[in-house]
Length: 147
Image (cartoon, rainbow, N blue to C red; front, side, top):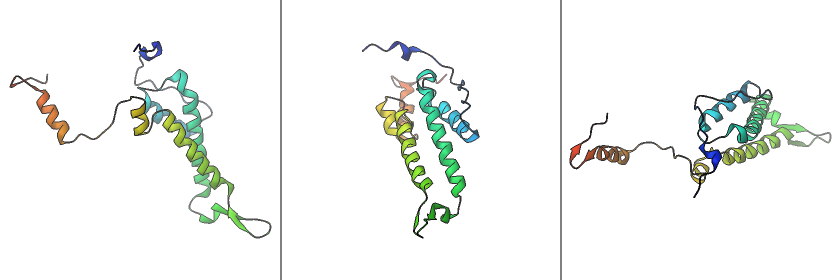
């Protein structure tokens, strides 16, 4: 199967695109985190708009959390007829979190999506890995130097 031309581009893993002006410090921190974590598979040219939307949504959730704080009563308000109802920001936060999850999935930031996209699997080394590593250094009953 031929490899698409754009997949052959190389990037310097230390180069993180500059955060857009639409991001506050919270959004900019997530921008850097996503580009640092996804530098091997994200394309600045193609993925920047979705990473920006993702970061804007995260900063909006942070603003809602900051407004609600620990005050449970801010999650509700009383209508003109005295009925206690959920504040619209609570629903907005729920919807934003669902959208954030969808965007994270779309750009390969969940284990199942990394597997679906054929990206490297991150896992903790175990005894089997150590055994395989020891055996990989032995060729024809002679230990091969690791250097």
